[in-house]
Image 1 (cartoon, one colour):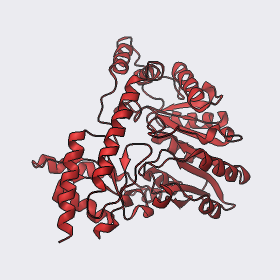
Image 2 (cartoon, one colour):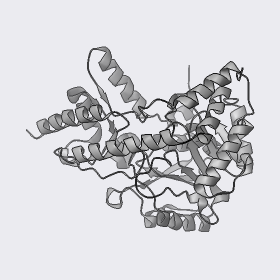
Image 3 (cartoon, rainbow, N blue to C red):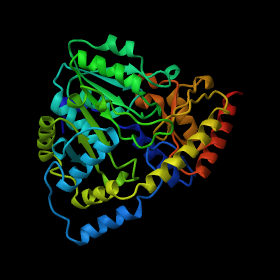
Length: 389
């Protein structure tokens, strides 16, 4: 069967490919430490699970409006207003099954063939994939280690052309753990407004910040009407398998995205949405406890990586990824990642899985236990010292 030519422009997410390879090795009896997949190892808090079970028992098994149930959209609007100091209504909210559909639907709704979209690199691979898929031009802006993985505003200004339509931001960032400061965002906002651009602000890790406070570009003057906020439940509430995310955007775009939902997924699962209401409105103790655990793990893995020959790692300010520079090992990123899986039984991701500017780095997810992190560090250390001989 001959595929449409556009399919050749559609990328993938390497984490799932590496996970499949690691599972295959486990099936052969190997003990693999998984640092490749960006998924909290915690269980969903019990009160959220109980709410979903109760909803199912109350027959919450039918279709909902494409944009989501009113109760959840209201809860999301209140949450966004409280955490971002904004004034949005449920009409600005669209509920989707996971975070990725907001990337997919926003780009489908806004971007024409030949438009240019600026996106962070190294960055979440679906950005570049979707830009290419719709026939637009993907314009990477490099995230630099010497700037704590924030991009240079001068670099951004040089990339903007009359064809630029959209700027994608991700803070805290996957894979680097970098966080854009308020001053960074203020400078970006000035450029965005002066060039009449739209911003897709991926804030899926907004609750996982270790130092300082999270700031959304949508909260800056003149930015709410030109910003799409992407957020969700997967990372904050350990709900990756529930598939529950949302976008907050201008009403006319929300209506367009809802039509895309009607034409694709119809709606998000009803009981999942009801559980989402509970997640946002119940006490947030479980979230605070998870973030505290992530910070403990961050400190452990960064300290350990910086003692391994050839590795140099900054302290991430958010999310749950370490992104060490491995140039000192003398190996390319993918070669080293493959070597660590084969020789050390540690699954990691090459920085190049996140774009061209990821060469020279690995991504390690520390969303796993202290025991696993210590085991991984010991194994990587032994493997790296072998490369010295």
